[in-house]
Figure 1 (tube, helix red, strand yellow):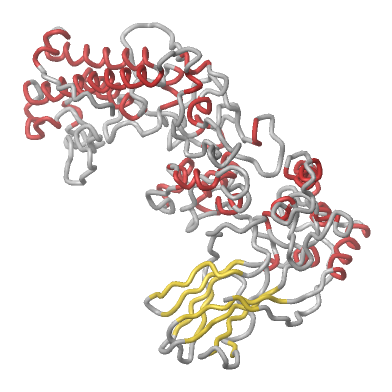
Figure 2: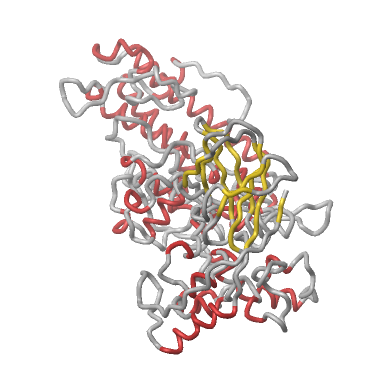
Length: 592
């Protein structure tokens, strides 16, 4: 249920900017800039809106403020201009409410029946959009009362944020209303919320003649109503949001508008945070590619442990790859190019600021081998060597030949050519596909070189899967028949890493352990594994972790596995043919 209320708020304080803030914020020291802020304060009137909610239990309630939640639903136009309830959760000590709405102070009210009078649970002091109500014993209805939207337009933002505003004017967002005008849809109410600022809301866009300053996608579309901030720029309560959640972009870039960017992203691995990224030992190393919040902090030159600790469990969202503020040299405002050939491997312990290379293609920023070396004994290489496999630089080989990039590396868009094919959208029978699942959906783009690409992919992957099993069986054979005595207790795991990979432990069971790795030589069991066996397992797991089973770079994949098998054969004192005969590998006929 939604109810609307009107309640006067204190008049906006009129302040000129006095240079506080960082980044592109500029001081509004001139009288003209100070007057611009005062005009915003006079032109936008106060008001409020309320959200109602039915909940259980109430008796002498107490309300505690909470940390700020992230936007968790799609709202047409981007940042919600009116309060909306986003979460109701029964906790051990009460009822937790979360909501969205313009920046400012909110008050929680309740009544015990639909016809009763509303009673306040304290003054309007909640500005973090979350609160916990305690002391619940009976049914009650709740509402959250807060400020009405007060839009100012991007020109008001430009008073301090001139550089960002100038950059944003060069993007397609700035011309969103002009796009509608060119196709005769400038008055279509179904389109205007995503092509203007605050359409249909108080102080929002009405028409190009009445509110021209609110045409197009502007600062307030994504950061929320900002007139209060423009008039009270040093008050943190009214500071506009910086929201990383994909729901922000998804309010407009969804299946109900043009293409299902948000829905398909939500199906992808990019939308998942599988482990807590907040611990100090993880927020900077793992977080740089598994936490959108951590990576954005690093790109700003910050230490995530200081600036996003406690809020690092944000996935790889839209703004991690796309720069919303500027037209970059790359398609779709990508932060990095689509194609590169420079080898790149960013290890977890590397200094991000010194090692980051903006000229490395967008996918390779994370999908690289992360400094993996054969001398590491703790665990297999990470699940991300795709870029290095594509360039033919991953792994070890016996000869001195220089790495040769795959033919697929010469594709016009490299990874995107296959993993982000877009199609459809012309009619109901051919729904749009935006490519943001990042899964290979179509082989149509392959047919200019491969007459039957589906058959070729199946054959390649079956052949590589069989080769992987052959090398793994050879390593098992070595472990059982030739492993040094201190390792025999591990059986077929004697060749494995201390934390075995999925070839030996497909479920990741914690109780499955390989030879112990330690910096103390007396306790280090990995030292008993011969160098050639360690190199062989390194090559083997790079191929497995690449995940394409030869499709990314077939010749390089075969070379790594051939070299691995040769090393195992040498350690066994046998020929490769003899090893192949000694180990029986069953061809299941099923691709991986």
